Image (cartoon, rainbow, N blue to C red; front, top):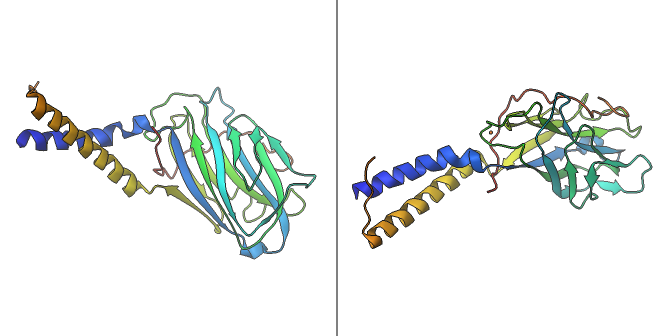
Length: 242
């Protein structure tokens, strides 16, 4: 019994310590209250840009689950895609580079919501990676002239992946909310359950076999493009993928 309790404790500790090594994906739910611009025409801008100092490890952004009552205009002459594939409200994928852009016109309703997942070798929940630069995912909105920022003086929200792989998120507009999924408490609970399952399975195998164990994470057309990501300020724990 003492051996089993000891194994359980070790498994829980192992789950907490080894969790960062498994992290390569982080997901945020994004909600934007656009009621102040309801009925107005403007633009949504999504970017995933690498820093300009040296090299950055690969990161890809996947935007999906686009919802709300905005009316997208896929035929707007100002629309552009640089390093991005797909079209809203479907899934859009942006591969991090020095200059990326997904820019589309729309008529605002009361809200916009979507999920964004950052994944790749450049993402590490616990940091510890070694690169010269990180990457920044940014969400911006513009007025009908396609150049004047809306809701904020620049990007409305950013998710930064620094050179060590550590992820932080910041809302730069009062009407934007970023929520990691799952929440940190859920993440650690999942890790704990996994550790318990491992411990029980290991103990069960040992009893059956009779074995004993000895002690012994620029602006372009008026929009942000090529720049070094800001330093991480709000480190948020988000969903790891094995």
